[in-house]
Length: 168
Image 1 (cartoon, rainbow, N blue to C red):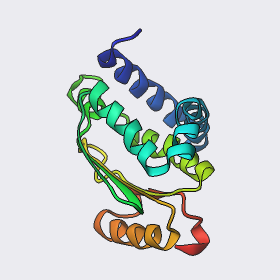
Image 2 (cartoon, rainbow, N blue to C red):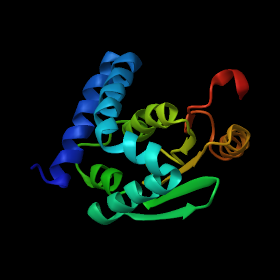
Image 3 (tube, one colour):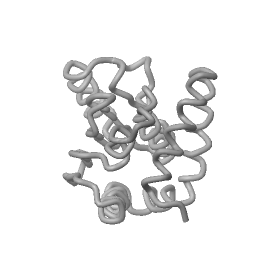
Image 4 (tube, rainbow, N blue to C red):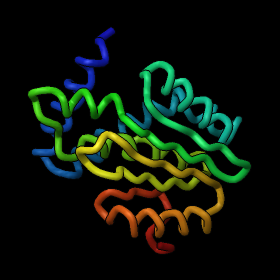
């Protein structure tokens, strides 16, 4: 298996290559990654709901040594990545990060949330700051309110959601 130090740098170069080909190529790549991640996430998220999502990101926290925090309630899950180990490695390398490196996370998780009946608001916070925020719920109005809140804080180019655009 490729060590994570090398893997994230490889990922970064893939993103740079696809970014030069255009937004559609990046989107198609994220869709492929999302379909692959379904093998690990769909049944867990469907069967256990927010608890299953909490368990998934808790495992990621441990395996990748992430500085993150989760807040699980009956109606939503909040995930705060305080220091992303992946972006941190890319930023510290001499290769320079792809301008849209962080887009891959919402790029793969949002389709999965849509397929499992959840709404997600994903705030990158900053494209070179290794932190992000994710809010997941089945309550559409709660997700819409959170989307407006995060949008006011961060701006349209940093906040992603799977809420259909006719409602926000």
